[in-house]
Picture (cartoon, rainbow, N blue to C red):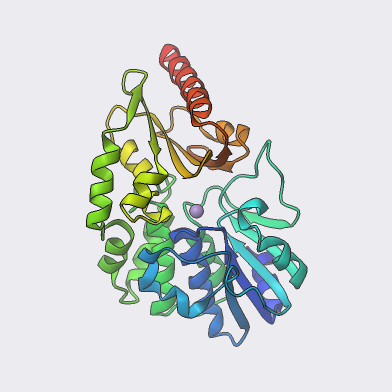
Length: 329
Ligand SMILES: [Mn+2]
């Protein structure tokens, strides 16, 4: 972190970015650091691949972020930091442009390096013990001795609250709570953050859920749940892709479930697969087999091909792991 802070300290112009279809973690980390660095007199910009999902409106993303898909021109910089991924494929098509225009470029992340997938071609600062990249942005801000104001605090609090899912997944560390407590002292609107991230469900969303909850398939005595979200259901209920992100977390709230897989149909024969586990079995290698990545117990991949084949192979793989675990215990 000292070395990283020195690199940031030396740079006069900095770009902050995150992965495609950003989430609260990467977004909160990059905007928190952006607000903190602005006070230091450096030239800082935030450039993301595509638009920010609407639930993050409370962070005023559109007044601070340049979106590459609608505004692809920007000048060269000393340093680029990319948050919440070390997988260049999910920063496409922005990644090669950032790489060409930055004297130095780094990933700041808490995901492990892929075992089977491509390794980053640039340097990375990775701490897999951090529950969020907001935690890493916080440590960097502290190391740089930058002041924390209400904007910085709101963004960092958002990052930590989002990735820990309201402090459920803190990796057995007090860090998330300690940083959150410090951020709350800056008079941020804590409940607005919670409501924006986990409340504010629309009537459309509820109608969508009423349809899809009846379509969950259960396997292994209710230990495994599989659900396919049809493109037609997403469209019919006017949902943006981000609004289906929490459906997998709902599956994981079922008492008997140990693992779940959600297939979101994005196009004909195109799926985004999300995998989750409560910790008895790992789901990262299956995602990597499909060309994806993520965390040990929360991973994903983009799939092309017939749903039935992917579904059968996911059911087979996860059932085998669950049965092996059951017979071992
Ligand atoms: Mn994250």
